[in-house]
Length: 385
Image (cartoon, rainbow, N blue to C red; front, top):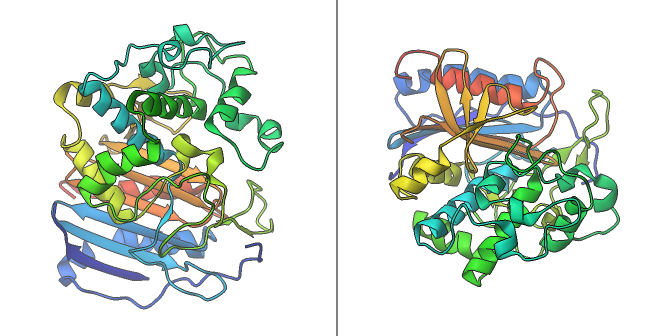
Protein backbone atom coordinates (compact mmCIF):
# COMPACT_ATOMS: atom_id res chain seq x y z
CA UNK A 1 0.00 0.00 0.00
CA UNK A 2 1.24 3.44 -0.89
CA UNK A 3 -0.50 6.49 0.41
CA UNK A 4 0.12 10.09 1.27
CA UNK A 5 -1.72 13.28 2.10
CA UNK A 6 -1.01 16.73 0.73
CA UNK A 7 -2.64 20.10 0.27
CA UNK A 8 -3.85 21.41 -3.07
CA UNK A 9 -5.22 24.66 -4.42
CA UNK A 10 -8.63 24.67 -4.64
CA UNK A 11 -0.60 -6.97 -23.69
CA UNK A 12 -1.50 -9.90 -24.41
CA UNK A 13 0.47 -11.48 -21.55
CA UNK A 14 -1.13 -13.53 -18.85
CA UNK A 15 -1.25 -11.54 -15.66
CA UNK A 16 1.16 -12.46 -12.91
CA UNK A 17 -0.21 -12.60 -9.35
CA UNK A 18 -0.55 -8.97 -8.25
CA UNK A 19 1.39 -7.62 -5.36
CA UNK A 20 -0.91 -7.00 -2.44
CA UNK A 21 0.67 -3.75 -1.40
CA UNK A 22 3.82 -1.73 -1.41
CA UNK A 23 5.55 0.02 1.42
CA UNK A 24 3.51 2.53 3.36
CA UNK A 25 4.57 6.13 2.87
CA UNK A 26 3.26 8.79 5.22
CA UNK A 27 3.46 12.53 4.74
CA UNK A 28 0.57 13.53 6.97
CA UNK A 29 -0.16 13.50 10.70
CA UNK A 30 -1.12 10.10 12.05
CA UNK A 31 -4.57 11.38 12.97
CA UNK A 32 -5.25 12.30 9.34
CA UNK A 33 -3.96 8.94 8.13
CA UNK A 34 -6.18 7.11 10.61
CA UNK A 35 -9.24 8.81 9.11
CA UNK A 36 -8.63 6.81 5.91
CA UNK A 37 -8.06 3.40 7.48
CA UNK A 38 -11.31 1.97 6.06
CA UNK A 39 -10.36 3.15 2.57
CA UNK A 40 -6.87 1.66 2.88
CA UNK A 41 -8.36 -1.70 3.85
CA UNK A 42 -10.75 -1.66 0.91
CA UNK A 43 -7.95 -0.87 -1.54
CA UNK A 44 -5.97 -3.82 -0.30
CA UNK A 45 -9.03 -6.11 -0.35
CA UNK A 46 -9.70 -5.16 -3.98
CA UNK A 47 -6.33 -6.69 -4.83
CA UNK A 48 -6.03 -9.57 -2.37
CA UNK A 49 -9.70 -10.66 -2.54
CA UNK A 50 -10.97 -9.15 -5.78
CA UNK A 51 -7.91 -10.28 -7.73
CA UNK A 52 -7.47 -6.95 -9.46
CA UNK A 53 -4.01 -5.93 -10.70
CA UNK A 54 -4.10 -2.55 -9.02
CA UNK A 55 -6.29 0.19 -7.62
CA UNK A 56 -5.82 3.82 -6.72
CA UNK A 57 -7.96 6.35 -4.91
CA UNK A 58 -7.68 10.05 -4.27
CA UNK A 59 -9.83 11.65 -1.60
CA UNK A 60 -10.37 15.38 -1.43
CA UNK A 61 -11.52 17.27 1.64
CA UNK A 62 -11.50 20.98 0.94
CA UNK A 63 -7.89 21.92 0.25
CA UNK A 64 -6.55 18.61 1.54
CA UNK A 65 -6.08 15.47 -0.52
CA UNK A 66 -5.16 11.90 0.35
CA UNK A 67 -3.89 9.37 -2.21
CA UNK A 68 -3.57 5.61 -1.77
CA UNK A 69 -2.80 2.59 -3.94
CA UNK A 70 -2.63 -1.19 -3.73
CA UNK A 71 -1.37 -3.72 -6.25
CA UNK A 72 0.58 -2.78 -9.35
CA UNK A 73 0.47 -0.64 -12.46
CA UNK A 74 2.34 -3.27 -14.49
CA UNK A 75 2.16 -6.99 -13.72
CA UNK A 76 5.38 -7.62 -15.66
CA UNK A 77 7.60 -5.15 -13.82
CA UNK A 78 5.73 -4.91 -10.51
CA UNK A 79 5.74 -1.12 -10.68
CA UNK A 80 3.32 0.51 -8.27
CA UNK A 81 0.51 2.76 -9.39
CA UNK A 82 1.27 6.46 -9.17
CA UNK A 83 -0.67 9.60 -8.37
CA UNK A 84 0.39 10.86 -11.81
CA UNK A 85 -0.88 7.81 -13.70
CA UNK A 86 -3.23 8.53 -16.57
CA UNK A 87 -6.03 6.12 -17.39
CA UNK A 88 -9.03 5.80 -19.69
CA UNK A 89 -12.09 7.26 -17.97
CA UNK A 90 -14.83 5.82 -20.18
CA UNK A 91 -18.22 7.42 -19.65
CA UNK A 92 -16.92 10.09 -17.30
CA UNK A 93 -16.13 11.68 -20.66
CA UNK A 94 -19.86 12.38 -20.90
CA UNK A 95 -19.64 14.87 -18.05
CA UNK A 96 -17.02 16.88 -19.92
CA UNK A 97 -19.11 16.85 -23.11
CA UNK A 98 -22.28 17.86 -21.28
CA UNK A 99 -20.41 20.73 -19.61
CA UNK A 100 -19.27 22.04 -22.98
CA UNK A 101 -22.81 21.79 -24.41
CA UNK A 102 -24.27 23.61 -21.41
CA UNK A 103 -21.67 26.35 -21.74
CA UNK A 104 -22.72 26.78 -25.36
CA UNK A 105 -26.34 27.00 -24.21
CA UNK A 106 -25.37 29.68 -21.71
CA UNK A 107 -23.71 31.62 -24.55
CA UNK A 108 -26.89 31.40 -26.63
CA UNK A 109 -25.16 29.38 -29.33
CA UNK A 110 -27.66 26.54 -29.00
CA UNK A 111 -30.67 25.59 -26.89
CA UNK A 112 -31.31 22.34 -25.05
CA UNK A 113 -34.72 22.35 -26.74
CA UNK A 114 -33.16 22.41 -30.21
CA UNK A 115 -33.69 19.17 -32.11
CA UNK A 116 -31.03 16.93 -33.56
CA UNK A 117 -32.55 17.51 -36.99
CA UNK A 118 -31.96 21.25 -36.68
CA UNK A 119 -28.22 20.77 -36.12
CA UNK A 120 -27.58 17.53 -38.00
CA UNK A 121 -30.11 17.40 -40.86
CA UNK A 122 -30.76 13.89 -42.14
CA UNK A 123 -28.28 12.23 -39.76
CA UNK A 124 -30.86 10.59 -37.48
CA UNK A 125 -33.24 8.86 -39.85
CA UNK A 126 -34.66 5.46 -40.73
CA UNK A 127 -36.06 3.90 -37.57
CA UNK A 128 -35.48 7.20 -35.75
CA UNK A 129 -36.75 10.75 -36.24
CA UNK A 130 -34.19 13.42 -35.43
CA UNK A 131 -36.93 16.07 -35.41
CA UNK A 132 -38.42 14.47 -32.30
CA UNK A 133 -35.18 14.30 -30.30
CA UNK A 134 -33.88 17.34 -28.43
CA UNK A 135 -30.38 18.02 -27.18
CA UNK A 136 -31.68 17.67 -23.62
CA UNK A 137 -32.92 14.15 -24.45
CA UNK A 138 -29.45 13.27 -25.71
CA UNK A 139 -27.78 14.49 -22.55
CA UNK A 140 -30.14 12.73 -20.11
CA UNK A 141 -30.57 9.52 -22.15
CA UNK A 142 -34.29 9.91 -22.79
CA UNK A 143 -33.98 9.96 -26.61
CA UNK A 144 -34.67 6.25 -27.09
CA UNK A 145 -31.94 6.10 -29.76
CA UNK A 146 -30.33 2.65 -29.99
CA UNK A 147 -26.99 2.26 -28.22
CA UNK A 148 -24.46 1.49 -30.96
CA UNK A 149 -22.11 -0.37 -28.58
CA UNK A 150 -24.83 -3.00 -28.17
CA UNK A 151 -24.21 -4.07 -31.78
CA UNK A 152 -20.75 -5.58 -31.44
CA UNK A 153 -21.09 -7.43 -34.75
CA UNK A 154 -21.44 -4.16 -36.64
CA UNK A 155 -18.61 -2.54 -34.70
CA UNK A 156 -16.28 -5.45 -35.42
CA UNK A 157 -16.73 -5.12 -39.19
CA UNK A 158 -14.27 -2.22 -39.17
CA UNK A 159 -11.06 -1.56 -37.25
CA UNK A 160 -11.71 2.14 -36.85
CA UNK A 161 -14.80 4.31 -36.85
CA UNK A 162 -15.90 7.85 -37.53
CA UNK A 163 -18.61 9.41 -35.35
CA UNK A 164 -20.91 9.28 -38.37
CA UNK A 165 -20.40 5.56 -38.80
CA UNK A 166 -21.26 4.98 -35.14
CA UNK A 167 -24.52 6.88 -35.58
CA UNK A 168 -25.31 4.84 -38.70
CA UNK A 169 -25.00 1.64 -36.69
CA UNK A 170 -27.50 3.04 -34.20
CA UNK A 171 -30.12 4.35 -36.59
CA UNK A 172 -30.19 1.04 -38.48
CA UNK A 173 -31.75 -0.50 -35.37
CA UNK A 174 -35.17 0.23 -33.84
CA UNK A 175 -35.39 2.73 -30.98
CA UNK A 176 -35.82 1.59 -27.40
CA UNK A 177 -38.89 3.84 -27.01
CA UNK A 178 -40.53 6.99 -28.32
CA UNK A 179 -38.33 10.03 -27.59
CA UNK A 180 -38.98 11.41 -24.12
CA UNK A 181 -41.10 8.47 -22.93
CA UNK A 182 -38.44 6.42 -21.11
CA UNK A 183 -34.79 6.14 -20.10
CA UNK A 184 -32.04 3.96 -21.55
CA UNK A 185 -28.29 4.50 -21.43
CA UNK A 186 -27.07 5.03 -24.98
CA UNK A 187 -23.59 6.01 -26.07
CA UNK A 188 -25.08 7.20 -29.35
CA UNK A 189 -26.60 10.15 -27.51
CA UNK A 190 -23.19 11.58 -26.69
CA UNK A 191 -21.71 10.93 -30.12
CA UNK A 192 -24.55 13.07 -31.44
CA UNK A 193 -23.93 15.68 -28.75
CA UNK A 194 -20.27 15.77 -29.79
CA UNK A 195 -21.22 16.26 -33.44
CA UNK A 196 -23.61 19.07 -32.52
CA UNK A 197 -20.86 20.73 -30.50
CA UNK A 198 -18.55 20.64 -33.50
CA UNK A 199 -21.28 22.02 -35.78
CA UNK A 200 -22.09 24.83 -33.35
CA UNK A 201 -18.48 25.87 -32.77
CA UNK A 202 -16.75 25.00 -36.03
CA UNK A 203 -13.98 23.34 -34.02
CA UNK A 204 -13.12 19.79 -33.02
CA UNK A 205 -14.59 18.43 -29.80
CA UNK A 206 -11.13 17.74 -28.38
CA UNK A 207 -10.20 21.39 -28.84
CA UNK A 208 -13.40 22.60 -27.19
CA UNK A 209 -12.82 20.40 -24.14
CA UNK A 210 -9.22 21.56 -23.88
CA UNK A 211 -10.07 25.25 -24.32
CA UNK A 212 -13.08 25.34 -22.04
CA UNK A 213 -12.15 22.86 -19.30
CA UNK A 214 -8.66 21.32 -19.29
CA UNK A 215 -6.60 24.48 -19.75
CA UNK A 216 -8.59 26.80 -17.46
CA UNK A 217 -8.55 24.23 -14.63
CA UNK A 218 -4.95 23.13 -15.17
CA UNK A 219 -5.93 19.55 -15.99
CA UNK A 220 -2.56 18.64 -17.51
CA UNK A 221 -3.30 14.90 -17.73
CA UNK A 222 -6.77 15.21 -19.26
CA UNK A 223 -7.52 15.04 -22.98
CA UNK A 224 -9.64 13.49 -25.71
CA UNK A 225 -7.35 11.58 -28.11
CA UNK A 226 -7.29 12.74 -31.70
CA UNK A 227 -8.24 10.44 -34.56
CA UNK A 228 -8.55 7.29 -32.49
CA UNK A 229 -4.95 7.50 -31.25
CA UNK A 230 -4.49 4.16 -29.41
CA UNK A 231 -1.78 5.34 -27.02
CA UNK A 232 -2.02 6.81 -23.54
CA UNK A 233 0.49 9.66 -23.60
CA UNK A 234 2.41 10.36 -20.41
CA UNK A 235 2.79 8.19 -17.29
CA UNK A 236 0.16 5.48 -17.10
CA UNK A 237 -0.75 2.08 -15.74
CA UNK A 238 -1.25 -0.92 -17.99
CA UNK A 239 -4.94 -1.73 -18.54
CA UNK A 240 -5.91 -5.42 -18.16
CA UNK A 241 -9.13 -7.08 -19.33
CA UNK A 242 -10.82 -10.49 -19.20
CA UNK A 243 -13.08 -9.46 -22.10
CA UNK A 244 -16.18 -9.71 -19.90
CA UNK A 245 -15.59 -13.36 -18.98
CA UNK A 246 -16.55 -13.96 -15.37
CA UNK A 247 -14.79 -17.26 -14.63
CA UNK A 248 -11.76 -16.78 -12.34
CA UNK A 249 -9.46 -18.65 -14.74
CA UNK A 250 -10.33 -16.48 -17.75
CA UNK A 251 -7.20 -15.27 -19.56
CA UNK A 252 -6.11 -11.70 -18.94
CA UNK A 253 -5.21 -9.48 -21.89
CA UNK A 254 -3.42 -6.14 -22.02
CA UNK A 255 -5.76 -3.51 -23.48
CA UNK A 256 -3.62 -0.44 -22.79
CA UNK A 257 -3.35 0.44 -26.48
CA UNK A 258 -6.92 0.84 -27.68
CA UNK A 259 -8.56 2.47 -30.71
CA UNK A 260 -10.50 5.22 -28.98
CA UNK A 261 -12.50 6.16 -32.08
CA UNK A 262 -15.08 3.55 -31.08
CA UNK A 263 -15.95 5.63 -28.02
CA UNK A 264 -15.05 9.28 -28.81
CA UNK A 265 -17.46 11.67 -27.10
CA UNK A 266 -19.22 8.81 -25.31
CA UNK A 267 -16.15 7.52 -23.51
CA UNK A 268 -12.81 8.15 -25.19
CA UNK A 269 -11.12 10.53 -22.76
CA UNK A 270 -8.01 10.03 -20.62
CA UNK A 271 -7.38 11.67 -17.24
CA UNK A 272 -5.87 11.31 -13.76
CA UNK A 273 -7.41 11.02 -10.31
CA UNK A 274 -6.28 14.48 -9.33
CA UNK A 275 -7.61 16.05 -12.51
CA UNK A 276 -10.99 14.37 -12.08
CA UNK A 277 -11.29 15.60 -8.51
CA UNK A 278 -10.38 19.11 -9.60
CA UNK A 279 -12.90 19.09 -12.45
CA UNK A 280 -15.76 17.68 -10.42
CA UNK A 281 -14.90 19.98 -7.53
CA UNK A 282 -15.30 22.97 -9.84
CA UNK A 283 -18.43 21.53 -11.47
CA UNK A 284 -20.22 20.57 -8.26
CA UNK A 285 -19.12 23.84 -6.72
CA UNK A 286 -20.84 25.87 -9.41
CA UNK A 287 -17.72 27.29 -10.99
CA UNK A 288 -18.14 25.80 -14.48
CA UNK A 289 -21.70 26.81 -15.35
CA UNK A 290 -24.06 29.73 -14.71
CA UNK A 291 -26.95 29.02 -12.30
CA UNK A 292 -29.56 28.21 -14.97
CA UNK A 293 -27.34 25.67 -16.70
CA UNK A 294 -26.21 24.29 -13.34
CA UNK A 295 -29.86 23.69 -12.53
CA UNK A 296 -30.36 21.97 -15.88
CA UNK A 297 -27.37 19.69 -15.37
CA UNK A 298 -28.46 18.53 -11.93
CA UNK A 299 -32.16 18.03 -12.73
CA UNK A 300 -32.43 14.24 -12.80
CA UNK A 301 -34.67 11.60 -14.31
CA UNK A 302 -35.15 8.03 -12.99
CA UNK A 303 -32.87 5.36 -14.45
CA UNK A 304 -33.47 1.72 -15.40
CA UNK A 305 -31.11 -1.27 -15.49
CA UNK A 306 -28.15 0.86 -14.50
CA UNK A 307 -26.36 1.70 -11.26
CA UNK A 308 -28.42 0.90 -8.15
CA UNK A 309 -30.09 3.84 -6.40
CA UNK A 310 -29.06 6.24 -9.16
CA UNK A 311 -30.74 9.07 -11.04
CA UNK A 312 -29.34 10.79 -14.14
CA UNK A 313 -29.03 14.46 -14.95
CA UNK A 314 -27.20 15.92 -17.94
CA UNK A 315 -23.92 14.00 -18.01
CA UNK A 316 -23.93 13.53 -14.24
CA UNK A 317 -25.66 11.12 -11.89
CA UNK A 318 -26.66 10.96 -8.26
CA UNK A 319 -26.22 7.82 -6.17
CA UNK A 320 -28.02 7.25 -2.90
CA UNK A 321 -25.89 5.56 -0.25
CA UNK A 322 -27.28 3.20 2.44
CA UNK A 323 -26.65 5.79 5.15
CA UNK A 324 -29.03 8.21 3.45
CA UNK A 325 -26.44 10.51 1.90
CA UNK A 326 -26.52 11.30 -1.81
CA UNK A 327 -23.34 11.79 -3.82
CA UNK A 328 -22.96 13.26 -7.30
CA UNK A 329 -20.57 12.47 -10.14
CA UNK A 330 -20.10 9.86 -12.83
CA UNK A 331 -18.53 6.46 -13.48
CA UNK A 332 -16.83 5.04 -16.54
CA UNK A 333 -15.80 1.59 -17.73
CA UNK A 334 -13.70 0.52 -20.69
CA UNK A 335 -11.64 -2.57 -21.42
CA UNK A 336 -9.17 -2.76 -18.53
CA UNK A 337 -10.11 0.49 -16.79
CA UNK A 338 -13.04 1.26 -14.48
CA UNK A 339 -13.33 4.60 -12.75
CA UNK A 340 -15.65 6.46 -10.37
CA UNK A 341 -15.71 10.08 -9.26
CA UNK A 342 -18.41 11.07 -6.80
CA UNK A 343 -18.70 13.70 -4.13
CA UNK A 344 -20.87 15.93 -2.02
CA UNK A 345 -22.96 18.43 -3.94
CA UNK A 346 -20.84 21.44 -2.96
CA UNK A 347 -17.68 19.87 -4.41
CA UNK A 348 -15.61 20.10 -1.23
CA UNK A 349 -15.56 16.34 -0.59
CA UNK A 350 -14.75 13.96 -3.44
CA UNK A 351 -13.49 10.44 -4.08
CA UNK A 352 -11.95 9.31 -7.38
CA UNK A 353 -11.11 5.63 -7.78
CA UNK A 354 -9.65 3.68 -10.70
CA UNK A 355 -8.90 -0.01 -11.15
CA UNK A 356 -6.68 -1.21 -14.01
CA UNK A 357 -8.70 -4.39 -14.46
CA UNK A 358 -12.35 -4.98 -15.34
CA UNK A 359 -13.30 -7.89 -13.13
CA UNK A 360 -13.69 -8.93 -9.51
CA UNK A 361 -12.96 -12.47 -8.36
CA UNK A 362 -14.48 -12.37 -4.90
CA UNK A 363 -16.74 -10.35 -2.62
CA UNK A 364 -18.00 -7.99 -5.33
CA UNK A 365 -19.90 -8.70 -8.54
CA UNK A 366 -17.75 -6.19 -10.42
CA UNK A 367 -15.63 -3.12 -9.64
CA UNK A 368 -18.76 -1.02 -9.01
CA UNK A 369 -19.22 -2.95 -5.77
CA UNK A 370 -15.73 -1.91 -4.71
CA UNK A 371 -16.42 1.70 -5.63
CA UNK A 372 -19.69 1.72 -3.67
CA UNK A 373 -17.92 0.38 -0.58
CA UNK A 374 -15.31 3.12 -0.92
CA UNK A 375 -17.99 5.79 -1.13
CA UNK A 376 -19.61 4.40 2.00
CA UNK A 377 -16.27 4.39 3.76
CA UNK A 378 -15.86 8.06 2.94
CA UNK A 379 -19.36 9.46 3.24
CA UNK A 380 -21.11 7.10 5.67
CA UNK A 381 -18.40 6.23 8.17
CA UNK A 382 -19.13 9.03 10.56
CA UNK A 383 -20.83 12.37 10.68
CA UNK A 384 -18.84 14.98 8.81
CA UNK A 385 -16.36 12.49 7.38
